[in-house]
Every structure is written in C-alpha cells, then in structure tokens.
Length: 475
Ligand code: B12
Ligand code: SF4
Image: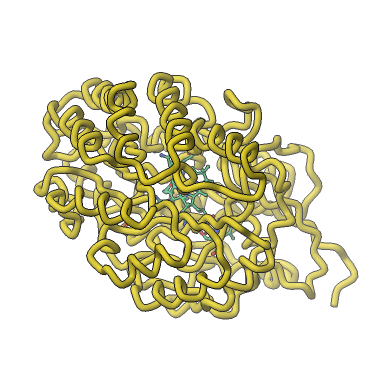
C-alpha cells in the first residue's frame, strides 16, 4: 500500500444544452447520473486515492484544481467542452483520461485530446489504468474486453455528488446495452448487442441502501432480456417502490411481463415510438414497432396505471413536410400522456451517420449541435428550416390547450399532476429556442411536478410525469 495520496478529479463537462445557469427554476432540473458515482466506486482502495467529482451541469470546474489525474466523461454534445478542458489540464501537466459514449463511438476523435482514453465500459479498464498509472506504465488506450461481466461491480458511490442539487439521486441501473439495432442509436454502435446485467440481488441491495420509495432506471431498454426483466420485476415487488424506466413497445406484446411490471410498481415508461410510418420504421431498422398497435400500447399501459412518455423523431428519409402535424395529431388522438419530439441525430459512429456521410449529407461536425434538437444533416424531403420549424409546430400543436384537454381526458395519472406536467411541457413547447441554450433535458414539467408532489406528500411521487425524461433521441 502506498502512502502517497493519489488525487483524481472526475468531471462531467457541460454542453450548450445543459449549463448550470439555473434555468427558470434556479435549481438543476436533472436526476443524478450514475457515471461519476460508478467511476468513483471503481477506484481500487489500495491506491489510497482522493476522488473529487464535478458535474458541470450543476457546478463550476475549478481550473486551478490540484490533481494527478483528471478523468472526463464525454457524450457527443459535450465533446467540444471536454476537449477544451482537457487541453487546459494537459497544459498544466495533469494526466487527462477521457471515456464515455462519444469516446467509445469514435475513439480516434478523442485520442488526440487525451493522455489516455477508455473505450467501452470501464469496470475492468479504469482500475487497471489507475494501477498502471501508479506503476508508471500508463498506456494510451484501454479497450473493454468483449467478455466483460458486471456481476462483481461495486455499488455506485452517490456520495461523490451533492444530492441536494439534483431532483433525485434515486437513480439505478440494472442492465446495459440493447439487443436491437436501430440505425440512429448509439447503443448497438458503441457497445454492441450483448446485453450486460447486474445481478438482481445487487440492484435490490442498491435500492434498499438508498431507502428509495421511487426509483428511476437509466437502462436504455430494461426488457432487452425478458427473462432477466421478469426476475428483476419479481424482486422489486416486496420493495414497494414506484419506478420509472425505458422499454420498447414489445413489453405490451407480453401480457405476463407487462402485468408483472405493473405489479412491481412501474408507474411511467418512456418508449421510442419514433415514427407513425411503417416505411420510416423499416428505414431505421425498428420495424418491431407497429404504428397500428400504438393505440393498444397506450391503452394497455393506462389500464395498468402506467403513464407513457413517447418519443418521436423527425427527419427520416420517408418524412415529408406533412409528417409533423400528422404525428402530433396522432399523438393527441391516441392519448399519449407526454409526447416528445426530437430531430434525428446521426451520432458519429452510428449506422445512420455512415449512411448520411456516404451520401455527403452531413452538414456540420460541430459536435455541440449533436443534441437531438438541431438539424446537422440534409433532410431528404424538406429543407433544414422546414425540419426545424416543423418540429416546433408539432410541440406547439401537442401542447395547445385543446390538445392537452383531449389527452387529459384519457390519462391514467391523477388529474392535477397530469395537468401540471402538461402545462410544464406547454411552457417548454413555446420556449424551445430558449431551451436550446439552457437546461433543457429534464423538463420544466418535471420540476413543477416534483414541487407539487412534495407539497402534497413529501415521501410519495405520483404516477404521471416523473418518467426519466431526457432520452428524446432514445427508443
Ligand atoms: C443521465 C443521462 C443524461 C443526463 C446527464 C448526462 C451525463 N453526461 O452524465 C442529462 C439529462 C444531462 C442527459 C442529457 C442528454 N443526453 Co443523456 N443520458 C443519460 C443516461 C440515461 C444515463 C447516463 C448514466 O448514468 N449511465 C450509467 C453509467 C454507469 O454509464 P456510462 O455513463 O456509459 O459510463 C460507463 C462507460 O461509458 C465508461 N465511462 C463513461 N465516462 C467515462 C469517463 C472516464 C474517464 C472513464 C475511464 C470511463 C467512462 O465507464 C462507465 C462505467 O462502465 C444515458 C444512457 C445510459 N443508460 O447510459 C444517456 C446518454 C448518455 N445521453 C445521450 C444523449 C444523446 C443525451 C442528449 C443529447 C439528449 C437530448 N436530446 O436532450 C442530452 C445531451 C446534453 C448535452 N449536454 O449535450 C446519449 C449519448 C449519445 C452521444 N453519442 O452523445 C446516451 C448514451 C443515451 C442514448 N440515447 O443513447 N443525459
Ligand atoms: S433505439 Fe432503443 S430499441 Fe433501438 S437499439 Fe437503441 S436502445 Fe435498443
């Protein structure tokens, strides 16, 4: 054991969408991400390290901070900021390590900006890297082994971030990855299609340790492995938590699993419906979604008290200029609790990016614009301005008072909460241009919802709004 204290600073850099200006609510509108708590817990104890974590979404990075190693997590929208910080710390002689989705998607984009990068999940590579650094034999790239197994990973250390600055820290992860292969999705592109799972007992232990009454799962598709999902849902029943997460519409084809999800406390799901056009879905390799059955999806969820936040994307090659209002009308007529719209984003490293690049249709490599809200490619059947404005029109149609009233008549959620959420979204729909440069991803509605609910019942969270929100680009 070494006597010297190894100083590690872990940073989640800000993107243009997500600065900590306080937005309209003066507090961060996000739940605690698990990236830094997970990395902190992986630091080998024998290294005698002191770990400081900074989430630039809620606090400033001290540019004079003292550290031996600065590790930064990078998503595409934050790559530019991460590289800027990396260059600053490297100039100061600090070893900079970059990792995360963007680094995994396009390692060669990140490599020149760092002393060392980690490609893929870091459960084995981050501890190895730290031991190598201590022994003076740091390599420039660490790549996740294809046989990585999460069964022995430690529970995330949430104490490294200030809980009070987030809407909630009851954020959990059971699985990683997804078995599907949607062309726009970063998940199969970055991490392949083998789902990884934490042992169910470990997830339960984490929820118990947090004494959570409400749980948000950040898993990108909780039902990627349905047998695992069934085991997890069974294990959640005795915990009596209300939980929110992301699945595909396929959950509604499996009545047994859906019933189990409802019994286990599921109160809100985010699903990527993506498009109401079958050719559009085929184009994205998401033909398992069937628009004919979307009304049944909504109805089946509502019958079980589960609210649906449904994400649609605009700008697919099959989308003509009438797609916006058609989709918005469909979302309203179908009674979706919270429809969301995003602009297709060809994240670098994805199949979609390769297709568009081969056709010369990528318009910018300014990664800050890769946020699901800006048009970064040439659409096939409309102009860039039509795509941008049409998306805004869909938001406005969906959240006008008459549309809200029609959806509220069908909602499975308690009316006051559903109303509050919708009004929050209405505000957002009418201020999209402001949110492009502000704290957007977790909705004003969510903040409003949390406030209302906290007043009503400090320990409970109701049904409607609190689905984990930000994955407008996810399915
Ligand atoms: C919480 C969350 C957020 C939070 C915080 C983001 C953050 N930087 O932490 C908020 C709400 C701000 C957010 C916003 C957005 N998000 Co988001 N988000 C997530 C989410 C659901 C969970 C993150 C998490 O906690 N993961 C669990 C941890 C343990 O996994 P991990 O982060 O991958 O970390 C592991 C490895 O990647 C690696 N690693 C990661 N970082 C580092 C750093 C070092 C030094 C090392 C060694 C290793 C390492 O080690 C970890 C352990 O294995 C993920 C999806 C997911 N489940 O991962 C999407 C995800 C990160 N988001 C995504 C996107 C697209 C967005 C938005 C653009 C969505 C939108 N339209 O609004 C915005 C972008 C905001 C911006 N600034 O540009 C994409 C990123 C794709 C990309 N190429 O950029 C993801 C992957 C989801 C997806 N659709 O595929 N998001
Ligand atoms: S969009 Fe959803 S269903 Fe498709 S690959 Fe990504 S996580 Fe899986």
